[in-house]
Every structure is written in structure tokens, then in C-alpha cells.
Image (cartoon, rainbow, N blue to C red; front, top):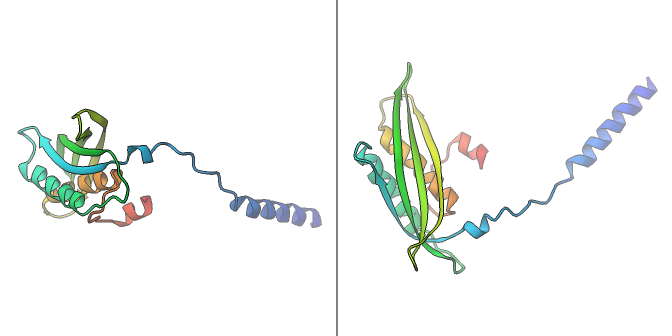
Length: 162
């Protein structure tokens, strides 16, 4: 019995001492990818909803206008291309998805300095406007990636993710 108590106390002591241990964060170059975004241009194919393109453009432009950088960074314009959208009606509600490609282009010489793509998806219970909600999701991701100061529409899931 005493031996078992000793083992349990040893494990608890070791666990408590290890909970205070933290590995230093390895610099992954995220600060190198920080830009002074001067504008955004949203494009899409003709079969993509025009209201999705306009709403995304307005939300990203609003975030860009409200961002002030304290240091001098590479000035860029971001080109946002909505490649594909999908609307899936479900038994209860619907799911809206979009595939987006974002390219940062240097203002000085017009050369692309970074490019990436991501998928955004939302689930709506009612008959709300899916384009507006999907535009908010796309803009929120871009605001987060480029560290822009803009209105972030957070949810419980995104609050836990950040």
C-alpha cells in the first residue's frame, strides 16, 4: 500500500513539474510574410455569384483601410481569386463552400511575393444569404493571415481556434 502511494505521488510530482515546461516557439518566418497591404482586388469566374465577390471585396477593403502599420514593410496589393463555389442543400440547412487563391503582389515592381490558397465553408440552418456569410468567412481568413485590423466576426469555434 505504501509502495503504491509512493508511485502515485512520484507520478503526480513528475507531471506537475512537466506542466510548467514549455518549448520555445521556433520562428517559422511568419513575420517575414507580413506586408503593408495597400489594396485588394477580388476576381471570380462568371459562374460565381456576383454578390459573393462584391461582399468579399467590401469586407477586405474595410479591413485594409482600418489597418495602420507602425513599421515600414513591403507594400503589396492582394489579388483574391474565388476559384470555385459549391452549395450543398442538406436535410436541415445547407453548406456553402468556396476555394480561394490569394496572391500578394509588390507595389514597386508588380512581382508576386507570396501566394496561397484555402477553402472556406459555412453551414446555415435557415434560408439566410449564404453569399454574405461565406464572404465574411473568406474575409476573416484573409484578415487573420495578413494581420489586418478589421471587423472579425468570431464564433465559438474560431475563438477556440485562435
